[in-house]
Image (cartoon, rainbow, N blue to C red):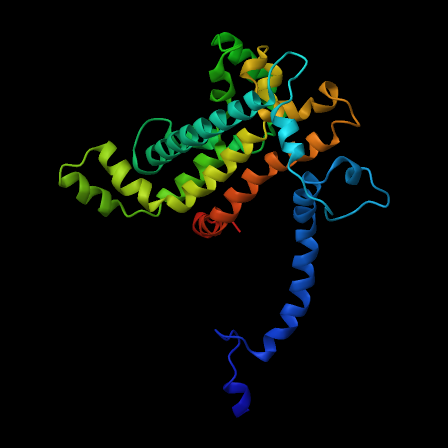
Length: 290
């Protein structure tokens, strides 16, 4: 009994009782990381290793030729692949920044302001969480046409700014900011912009990090704007190039380029999640989501 009471359920340092968890989780972690290792290894394989039989998991003679060939490749329209990568980076960064500002401002208004139809509008936003993107693609297309955005650079950004889950998460997070704190700032002469910039934004950084991840993945991996709204190849992003790769390249000779392009598509998603995943968990804990 005494020995049982002296043993902690969750010791802060390594304890022999934790060994069973390592025996289970270590092989599982290794199994789950194998696809990531393969993506990196496959991208640096020379042509002869890409078609070797039996297939090799690791590259025996790694090379960067696949990336050099990718960046020097031109599509059938005469557009260099580097142009698609540049467009993808610019579009994604602009979308992330704009989505954060729009979602945070709307969340602040819904949480701390009083106006007519407030509850109805937020209910509509919550209802929008039920719809998959393909369900609203046709009305979205008509809206884009009416706004005259067809074949413009902005059409890659504006349709992606409406993120119901972003508004929902930020509104739930801002609800936890004490009204007394905002009222004290207003009594000191702070306006809405000052309150938003110096109180709301700093105190909702975990939620903002979550929105950054979601909007980044949505924009970086999105092919809808380039497919439906853009005819000019100079305005299309890297995800669109990846979706049409087999149509623009020889299926055999293009395997090395395809492996390099897949790694370029994968790395940004991996990095942003690694650096922000702890904030994502904090957001889920504070927003009431389990």
